[in-house]
Image (cartoon, rainbow, N blue to C red; front, side, top):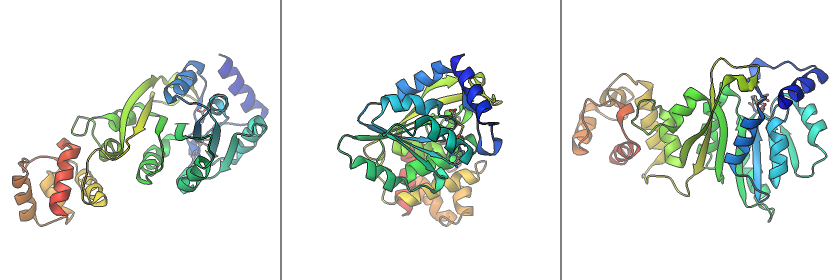
Length: 283
Ligand code: SAH
């Protein structure tokens, strides 16, 4: 209740209505906030990047726990609110930018030069209209991160943590399992936000692996093959890859036989390791 009142009061004071174009759904459930903070396991040795702080609900708790918190927010209406609330804290930094345009390498490396900050972590209630591009950026940029703890739509969460080859597998599933150890740590009802989204949400935690789960000769090629397989999900892997001109059909058939993979299999049924073998065979 306290958080609901506080959120409404801030919105009234600054004449804010949630901007749908920016995917704004503000958290109003303090139990959920506490659980996110707990799962993210933040300490004073941590440099935390918060994506889309909004009115600052998570930010306020992150500032109590972390050594440094840098928030990246696109909406200028939020910027003045956040500055009024938190600019008195020396360990608070606010960047007005689109997260997809921010150079996170530079930001993290600069902050980890501070000897008292040992690990970089991402914590966020993500804007849902760009969940996938944000997660892909965080992983593919190979940032020196320790973990990513983020709220996403429940359905997306299930796809992200699914074992590759399982029912909800999407091409991003492979990327997640290549770079991280993923798990759903919390399911969150839609009533935990204002405005309340149509669907429920979930918090996932991605622990970044010290090195990728499998070793391949050509990582870019591996992900190209996976993307091609999923662009034509209903087709067999063989047809999807030959339509995408990855190789001649005969070569692909020979490869599948050589690797003891059923030539009628669809890409979504393959494990990460199988895609790794295919990628190595063809590269
Ligand atoms: N963390 C807040 C708000 C979550 S809503 C809370 O939990 O209550 C998502 C937030 O992401 C909004 O503040 C929105 O303005 C911000 N946002 C949307 N698109 C963004 C982008 N491209 N880059 C950075 N922030 C973005």
